[in-house]
Amino acid sequence: QSALTQPASVSGSPGQSITISCIGTSSDVGGYKYVSWYQQHPGNAPKLMILDVSDRPSGVSNRFSGSKSGNTASLTISGLQAEDEADYYCSSYTYSSTYVFGTGTKVTVL
Amino acid sequence: EVQLVESGGGSVQPGGSLRLSCAASEFTFNFFWMNWVRQAPGKGLEWVANINEDGNEKYYVDSVKGRFTISRDNARSSLYLQMNSLRAEDTAVYYCARGWRSAFDTWGLGTMVTVSS
Image (cartoon, rainbow over all chains, first blue to last red; front, top):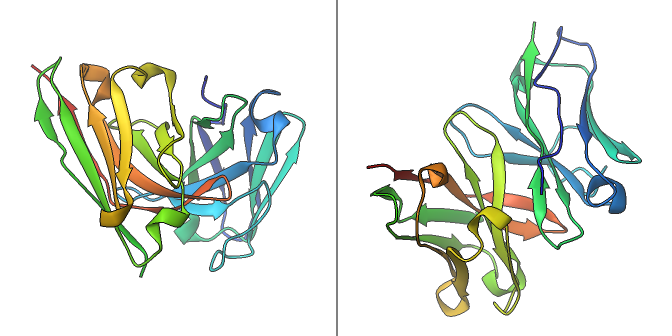
């Protein structure tokens, strides 16, 4: 149950697009279509942004999109805005019927 | 509005016990898996445990197996986490989270647990 691997930080200018990777194994990310992404602002609870690899819950901006290839999932934020500055975590269902989160990525809007 | 409110956190010595509660409102509690997720100070999220709709399926992260027990009372729309043999590394904010399609769609504000001598 090792944490999924994410880059520690990603940055971009307003209006640009950024992509956050989430690397797992065939026992989690690669084995299921059950990857989700969460946004967490300082001092707040996490917020679900993407589920089942690429589905957006109601109310989440279409600037957020998800994808997966093999053991790597990705979150792309298009048209970067100041309010997108936050920590982002991926999560995956695993072969042992448990869940594992990623190490987290701090997104900075320059 | 769908809401989850955690309680029961506090300070405890190593080896001690705490029982966390999570009160759910504005949704049909017994239709959903429920989860506990924790976050150590300045660290990332860690999934801790979950329980199915009627309480007869439970799963745990390896680091808490045999020490923590998740349970629920559907009549009270409440989720619990009994934590025994607490260690310093269990220090964290503990979040209650509703499960939906293999994701966590609703989160409480969390309750802080500090394990220290």
